[in-house]
Amino acid sequence: MKNKRVVVGVTWGDPAGVGPELARHVFRKLGRSLSLRRIGHGESRPGKPTLAGGKVAKEALMQSVDLLRSGEIQAVVNGPVSKDWLGKVGFRFPGQTEFYAKAFGLRPDDVTMMMIGPRLRVGLASTHLSLRKAVLGLRAKQIVRAGKHLGETLRRLGVARPKIAVCGLNPHAGESGKFGNEEKKVVLPAIQELRRKTQFRIFGPESPDAVFRRAWMGEFDGVVALYHDQGLIPAKLLDFDETVNVTAGLPFVRCSPDHGTAFALAGKGKARPDSFLAAVRLARKLVSKT
Image (cartoon, rainbow, N blue to C red; front, top):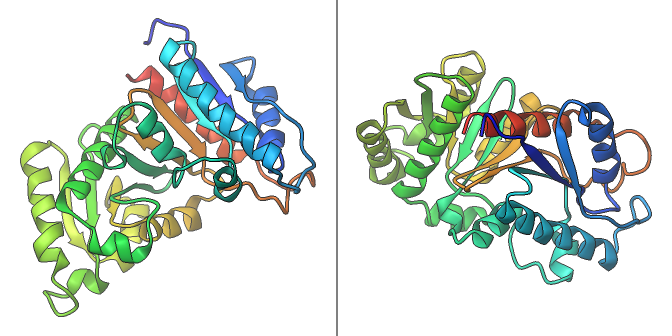
């Protein structure tokens, strides 16, 4: 891939959100230095989502799959979409992560949603589930998959032997069983398997209330979080404007900015393009490392 012209496809997201205005900024800023391809079209009043806009966003995702399969693009960066409005036009997936997994013959548990920022890198054992389902359905294999994908991504970003912390599920990582036994029954076996089957340095189960600060201070290169908000709250708190959502485990590079459609900001010139710019730059960098 290093000797091949790399084209990054960019879906502009819901046309009523901030995606189109931010994507235009990305093309102006990076269009001369990177090969970018716009995917999707359609006009909408900023801040006024419609069924037509939902269809535009859905069709862009489907078109991106065709372009990836044909080799016309080697990576895709997705502008923000509305799960609500996509659902109204027949999009039957919790998010874009699960859509791409299905499109390429993978299960949701075959891929990992990660948040990659300048100060914190987080891989998620589970993604778009209710907290109840995420906790009751937690399995060691999910943690192992997230740890492997996070470590592999960190290597592609230049970390030779990543140090990865795995969160506990309960307060204080269970406090030796006082607050729950998931650490002993689920998390620790996953950590032991990661230590056996990878060359990454794996630590844990770590207390969730302190591990993200420790990673931010440089003790760890990345953190495996066990459910959506456990990982995304600290990632967005620290690096909201520059964090990138990365899906690992797909046969191509897929990234997106870490924010949503922000309908209330659309058309007002207040939305920041930093995360979108970071997503395109990171997508191009990750392709070059494959």
